[in-house]
Length: 140
Ligand code: THU
Image 1 (spheres, rainbow, N blue to C red):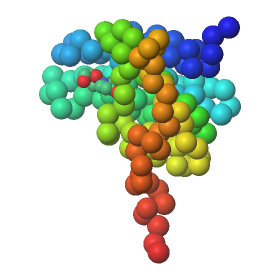
Image 2: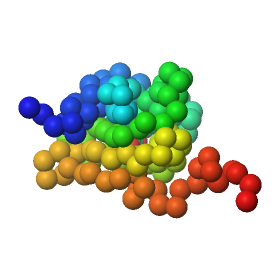
Image 3: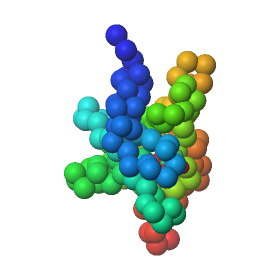
């Protein structure tokens, strides 16, 4: 029996096959697990204007938001096809984007990446302490 972590990482690896990454050749997949058991995946989408590229986490997050999800995010797995066992950690922008969904539902998702000796498990709040979020916009 594989653990929840291995299952979500496998979903992220699968998703990476859908990446459009002709410039970096670095195909990344992300899988978001929600408290109702559903998983939403995404893969990076690059652009000839390189700086416009979208990370896998942002694509997955956008899909989840468009499905109407507003919270309930319990875990995030990220996998890079070329990374082997190495962890691929969410970039700063992705941490902020993921944090929005986490804060909406008051969860602190675990972030999983890598495997074997390179496996990483860390909370999103550890990756993005003192996060800016929806509450920061409230007065007082
Ligand atoms: N990338 C992701 O999709 N997620 C990450 O966590 C790290 C980086 C993508 C962006 C770009 O398409 C490629 O990896 C190389 O940076």
